[in-house]
Length: 171
Image 1 (cartoon, rainbow, N blue to C red):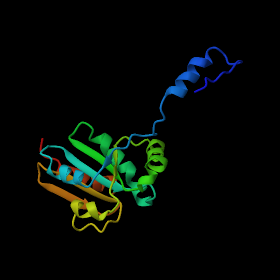
Image 2 (cartoon, helix red, strand yellow):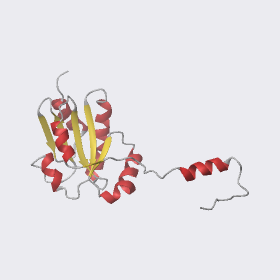
Image 3 (cartoon, one colour):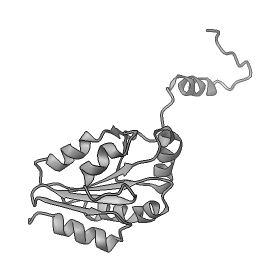
Image 4 (cartoon, rainbow, N blue to C red):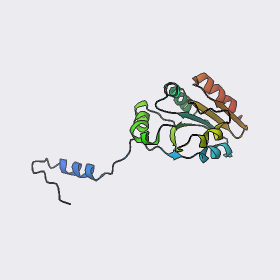
């Protein structure tokens, strides 16, 4: 491969250019991909942790509207055993071009994963047998209290927090 030569380049720019050309391209956000079996693992986890699993997509207006409530909950319960997981159901081809930039633009701090199933029927019934597949949808799990609370609607912060309080095991 021929060496690039820039005769008029400032000597300080050469190391910077070399660094920039040698760094591999990275995606905007490392979004883990999960399969439907992960739902089973969260449901079966022998832990005190309450899982708040929110199914959403960047193109879903009610989903986007409720994200600040999940972010607020994530911060308010950071010192408790509450784990907020935002599960993107966007198209796989849009993970790097839409989902990752959206996460960065909105400053989301909750865990974000991508549901890597081409057929939603592979996970819908695992989440809840009453789920039609519409989003937003939220599943709150507490193995310790043997609780699974499912909501197929946009939640307010107050509704979300009340459900989490109901699922939290006593201190």
